[in-house]
Length: 162
Image (cartoon, rainbow, N blue to C red; front, side, top):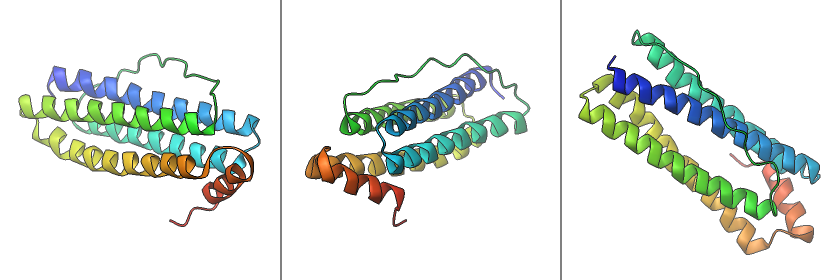
């Protein structure tokens, strides 16, 4: 495996684990606000991000590369409101999409075809992730994030239809 690609993939492992940490911090915020549906939903998002990190981890190892783990920054712990949490989440997912696109471009530049194939999964996954968070933000904006509307949204997130 090319050193440039390996270094970039190791950086993305850290980024995916930061995403997991961020969503877990958001889950803790929702727990403190007595919104168990949203807390559970964010915990699932956190677990998904760990799975993403492990997908890259395994890929690097399968290619004979070396995974080197870096320090993960502390995520924010306080948020203005549930809507603000989801707006920040959507913003974060857009940032991750840009990271994945940059990784893919590097794999193309370096002619690393296996990395391109693996990263194509992430490109598709990010379309889904952004759409999911955009949908939640839209629901919050339509319903408002206070009073009984908030409880309805919390209940919906505790019992998703998918």
